[in-house]
Image (tube, rainbow, N blue to C red):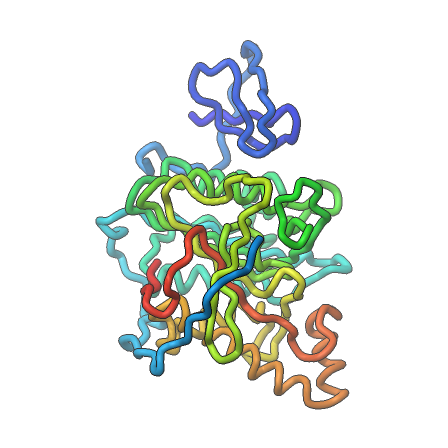
Length: 376
């Protein structure tokens, strides 16, 4: 049975090795001493824990997009789920989080829809086993699957637990994001990016430093993690060292976001690539303007649309397609006072004119976005 203890300083849940008398926190580095157990009945682990067998400087060169983007094979997105086992090259695991903040002043309409759509795509197109996908939304009946701060932390630990070479991991979040002042010198812009759990008003937000320490730095060689973050101020929310700065023509350059302090924000040999809804100083829309049917996060919709329309061959083609989809809708919404006011209502007042957001791509290592093939 997995034993978890809270860090004595920052209260992060830590997985205690069997027989250990103390443990150092990966987030704040405090040492927590473990007392002798009393004769109390053991607490069962959360139901989503896996079974035992589940075993700045900016001097850079710009790169232009290719003249033509190849088209992929016909979409499998609408076909029935496959009963095949995970790829023989490794396990597939995903954490999907959608938070609506229902009945609060910060309520969002599309986030749970985003979570359901993402799960459907992972199962049907990318052959993720349903049993290896952990969903956290307010609609879940299991108390450990409600997207509270504690449960999101636990889910992140579960995602990377016992990962091995060949594993493919996905972390998807749709909900509110924010920023707070950074005083350690680790941020180029002086701000930490944050995710807002359901109970953030009482328990606080999850800071990018913790996300990086939990699901980025531990990844060993051969493990691949994709993060899809549909939230405001989410450009560098995984604190990855490199950001792909792409202009409207598709030319791009990698910005170096490694902290001046020298703190390591990369992996232990694994690969992490993150698509996020907008730049750190932008907001992300929650709107029905794209699907025309129901509310979704603009970024999640644009990401799935890129895959569905055969524009998901490379990371560059996905990012370009997402930006094009949102830009087109932005132009359509920003045409008059009426549509501008409507957009403000749809986005909770977070966007004054249209959807002022540009999806971003960050990674632990720079690469050629137009030749590197996308795969989950």
